[in-house]
Length: 306
Image (cartoon, rainbow, N blue to C red; front, side):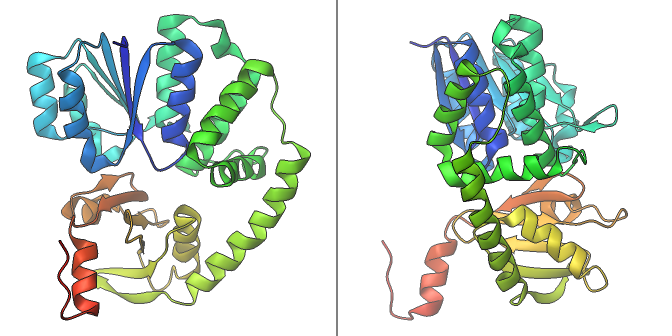
């Protein structure tokens, strides 16, 4: 039986890098990568096991689950989250929801890194390559770019798509162990150049299919897309700023993403109405569990899906 459990977001590097951090510091951890809607059930399962600590990073639990944990397992669970919509959960001592720290926007990885550095004092956490990678993850996840790092940070995010989640984790785990400074390999640079061109073509194509309308009185642009949703959403919000307040990107395999750039717009108002949340200008909401069956039913009148 492993001593620790880590539950992280499955979608992006901010969910993957906490796994790297745990593997660097501890050898006895079970890992769960999931969507927001799955966290409560996974935590319930984990609480039935004899873990010393259960960490939840870049995700959070429901209000009901938080109240339950506070009653039976508040010494065992630690949550490190940076989503504005979850700030009210800070009423519980095991919750650490931090959106900004000084002038810097935080992500799940940075919050968890600071916790591990403070509580374990492990020397690997002072590795310069690791620190650089964590900054790249933070900037991409929050769109809080430092000009000197912007391009490298964007390129580092592309490596997640190039390697895939599992290879990405193992590759950079080994890289940190073997190196003290970070630099892209020549092969990575070449692949990134190709991927940049592909990404630009993909976004340009999707922008041709934006549908405009209103939801709950809010002016929106809606597009269906599976890839590059953060960049696509921000491009939509900038390109159509005179026509829309919120860009909505629907991935029928995963979730709905919301993006905005106007200072007076808070996407949480819309996202929370549809059981989601996030930050003021970026967030998401889950899809109905039977959406794909509904789509099949609309396309094929005589269908019967078991």
